[in-house]
Image 1 (cartoon, rainbow, N blue to C red):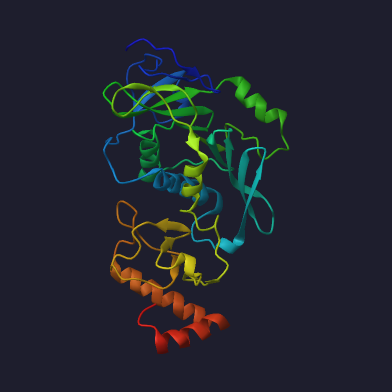
Image 2 (image 1 turned 90 degrees about the horizontal axis):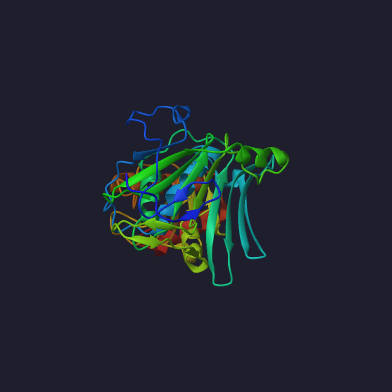
Amino acid sequence: MPPIASGTLLEDNTLCSGWGIEDDRRPPTNITRFEDIQTRKKIEVGMVTGYLQHWTCAEAFREVYQNCEMESCGPSVFLRDFSPGCSERYRVILIEKRHSDTKKLLDYIRFTYKKDGCATTKADDDKQSGKHGEGFKVAALIFRRHPNKHTFRVKSSGVSCNIIFNPGRDLACTITQLSKAKFDVAKEHPGDDMVANPMKDVSIYIGEPCQSRNSKGDGTRTNRIHIGDYGQWLNVMLDINLPTARVQTRSGTLILDPAYKNKFDLQGLLLPSGSMSGKQHRYNYDFSIGSTTRDRDSLSRPGQEARQIGEIWSAAILDGAQRVLNFSVFALIYLPSP
């Protein structure tokens, strides 16, 4: 193991270094519980560095957001059941998602930026997330990969998981037991739901400055997140930028706003490739259920796409939405496609 180079001490006392991070030097084992780690352990993530080269940080942010949303809100939910709010004060942009009835905080994203517009983001949800699929690992890879070079760290279950590139330029994760001081912070603010509990909550930190190895194997300074880039990331989440002209049904949401035309979403998350058929659509469709291609750019089958569009229109008409009734009559007479 090479010696640890000088780096930046992050808030969880994990040294993010350009030349390696010390583990506890115990023989490699199959770690099944975080309690098995005495101090620190580095494990391989098992993700090819060049995977999904066409993905940007916007797609990576979508995957992180989806993981937090599915844990805090659950699958197959209506956007109207939740009330996301966005506020900005003292160079802090805060997006909160609360239940519309109970007002309970479900998750939030806090983006703090400096005068130069660069910043870090922090997303918390209020449940321990014990399962993350490939999308979460891909998100970490995209954020860390050159030229993005953003740090990616998760705190939960009493440990800090820092995503790095090892000397062989493979993606790895250092898992570090958190100190008692980190737990004391949450105990000092028992009524503040914006202070994460490092044992039961999941906190994700993106864009912390430090010296680290990039995907090319070079030691370099990591990048902060620019506010302009952050604004572009938010465009992949429909519930943060809710259109006004929309009709919600059991089968999905029909969005009539012209600014959203020819776009497809799945449970509020943008599918970048739109329709697999290549057909131009006058409206936006947010499908409540569906499966995507492996790169999550579109629905997996054109037949599934056409069937769900029909179901959304049928449900909207049967529910008696007057605007949809007027639109459907106009579309049948004048328009060649939905």
